[in-house]
Image (cartoon, rainbow, N blue to C red; front, side, top):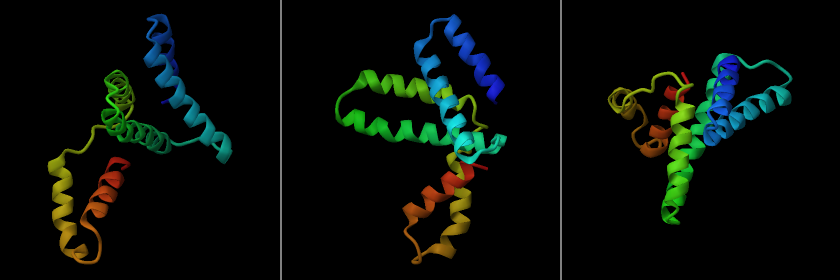
Length: 128
């Protein structure tokens, strides 16, 4: 993934695509920081988890910018999500996640908040 990110960064610089360049630079920095902090080379799965986390951050902040009426920032965030999503495996559909929840619900009913269970399942499935 690191080689692919470097290639994409060079392409973004050649094409003068500032948003793509900045997005890839931030992702590379996040990966390198985790490697530095843990003093090890990250596996592909660990790098995918970082990409997923970066996408989640951007998705979470969209609603805040919608409340503030900052459509210009929302457009950029959506484009950043698009750029980052290229590095993630194909995402599970709502139908696939629903099947997991149907099987899990009887085991957690009354023992855990369904919304929290759903969020955890989605996060785990996306990081598989």
